[in-house]
Length: 437
Image (tube, rainbow, N blue to C red):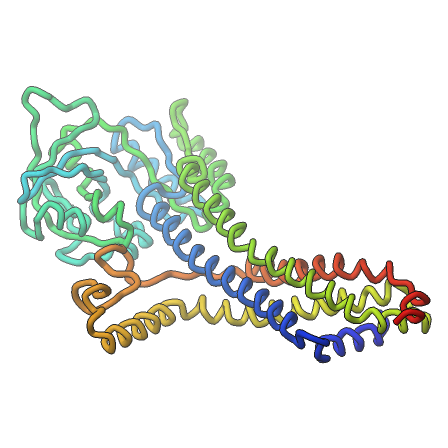
């Protein structure tokens, strides 16, 4: 590329136009910067929430792989020990899920998923232990007649550690509608995962309690967690081969991946992210149109300059490149500013919200008459009030590929707009312009 083309493009950006000065260029750069900043920050927050949801579901509930088909807890425990020796497997734990109704101090019962696990499950599954924050008592499911409840479930039932709850098994064909049998369980611990669905509808008991306390005939499952969940297909083949070597791969044994087990919710999360990118990405369309019209006006205002350049021998493509590069410089400036601002906001998003709360509360204090309208009851105004949101802070996760893609998309949108705006250069005839202008 010839150096004079870049030189003229830079001069166009620095030189004031006849009527509008630098307003059009400044608005274009600002628009690109705001679009990039918004998209980077929004995607970082969305990634944080989605990754947290996926991790909670996989680490607490569904596991990376599920091995089914064994008819007893003993066979399932044996299979889990074999699977735990397979390369790439972090842990393998047998469990049984029981759907039940549970009531405590309040007469109204709640539906609950009771998961029966080995008494040493937290030692075998460290990632589960990391996500179960014991807010009261301890994770004690030794023996029978004990249960560990989610914090929201315990609050809804009106129970604390040491209280007794009564559970009614609804699965396994054991329910007698004429004379339903309730199981009394003592609460030994209350946990919090930060995932509302688990905290308000989950409880843990020991595997021996499945037969003794619930008389349940549910088929046990082996939950498998991998070092890398994206290598689940390879792990399935290795596990199947290892079970076959030990005579544990019967006709009814089936291995289900997390991709299949959670297909609907993960598909919904993916679609949500795509739609959010499309909606926020419309900012670039608006800014691109603005750049198109700004450069089109620039071409019209600089008709005499273009005619002189053509008369001096500059080819139309070279003159057209001046305005394309001008658009690229606008896009580059906006993308750099927006990327820096977006990363800064994404990394400090909780600080930004805290600052916003401080400013609002300061305004409320000054305008005391409006305090009744804004205060949430105590502590003043909060963006994520615990009364409405089940989060303590906003999680963020920045992916380099996504940030780079947004950065490049902003530049490309500016280039495309500049290219179509600069096509008018070809139609300018130097002889006519210099004769009449």
